[in-house]
Amino acid sequence: MRAEEQSRSMIDEPIVVAKRRDGKTLRIECPHCHHHHTHGTDGGSRLYLGHRLAHCAEAHLPKQLRQRRSELGYHLVDLTEVRMSEQGMSDLFSEMDKIADASRESPTWVPADDQVGFVRLIREHRPDLTREQRDDLFTLWREHDRALQQADLAAARTHMAALWEERRNLFIARKFLPRADWPDAVQHICGRIVAQHLHIERLAKRANS
Ligand SMILES: [Zn+2]
Image 1 (cartoon, protein in one colour):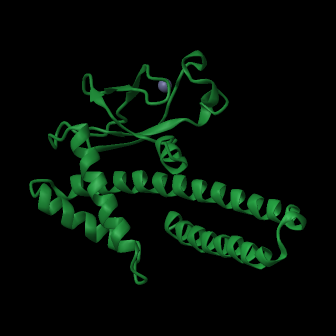
Image 2 (tube, protein in one colour):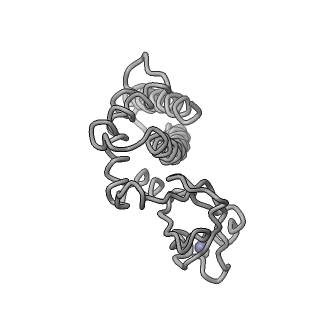
């Protein structure tokens, strides 16, 4: 698994499909501790049921999550009414990721373009959804997207730190390098650092949009 994929899979605030047990209780399988939790609906009957903090038992969590136990949470979604499977939602979001990635390549991209793209996609695939259901799905996709952007940004920053380390090592090794090779080597690493800096700036702009 590549570093970026690994960080993408470790998203802190996943989207979880909730099952209603009666009018008032939601049952979910926790993505952090893999046990079942129940939550109140807070009277909500919409597709997006909001964010909840997980209440995992410390012993059920993997070691690396125990210290952050109080911050772990998820976004709850009820897909019953729209008759969509979890896989269906995930496929829809992947499709939207592709549309967003492509439109963000444009220098004239603005955050509102994402919503336009999403509405078009939903109308095409699920013309039966109400505006409210579409808005809720878009809100969830935004959360999913924000988490991906943050993960990409974190991975890019880790890569930047590795490039600086490489540059530092190059300077340490300077006296062992043939003189003729030195300017090229420095130029090469500096070029990569500049390119990575621009990449991070672009990711940060998206992540904070
Ligand atoms: Zn849990």
